[in-house]
Image 1: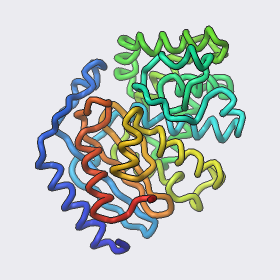
Image 2: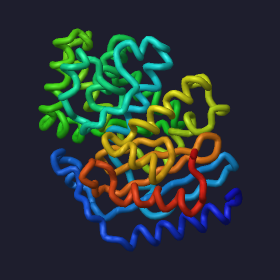
Image 3: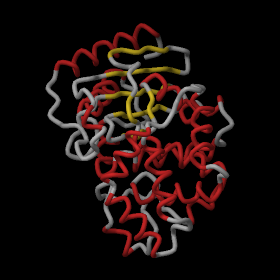
Image 4: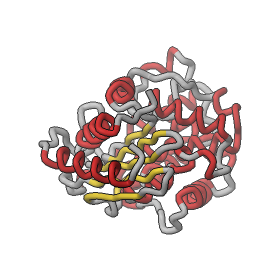
Length: 303
């Protein structure tokens, strides 16, 4: 499928199909600010290497990107530290929920991968050590990568997450006890909660991730690093549903409990989908269905 007509017609067809089904999930009620969002929204934005861009539904409504931001923090840490990143965080799927503490004891405080909460906290700790003003400098990086200067943190969401973030606080302190958090946990957690609170539209999200989709357009990461980030998204981007996403969709991607999903086909396209109701694994119910049907209809996945 290489023409604008094919892509756009398929996007319209899939959107109509997914919009019509009942969303069986619910919003991330455990974060008060996320529970305020209209749960019936559905937005999609698509862009390709042949300059096809198309948005449908609520694609210009701001969403809380949440754990999608973990790919951006990992990319910045990888850019700054290179292979040293993997000395403190692994690259294996966890097979456990995103906020699990279970494996940390047996793994001596080394998180299985950088896209679960424990791993993202270690990445945040690396950035706190590397950046002069972590929150300001990270936001500057995101704005530069996306080319949208108005992207910002949502202070009310960050405060909402901090107010209920007992599991993340436990994770950070537990990792600290193993010596794999170097800075004060309160500083790392404040950076983490703000990172997750970043708001973007589907259009902004899709454009932000072009540096991983189209490797010739950026100097953020080299080709080898880009391939490795995409591989981690493929195997670890959807928590303990990553295998099923690879099986049904077949794209590198990352989800967030705000209901957003970013997925990409290297050198072909980048697509952002948003629907706030989550399935039992914490991934957007309709977003997952949309991407499964989209790759089925286009017959384009990485496999």
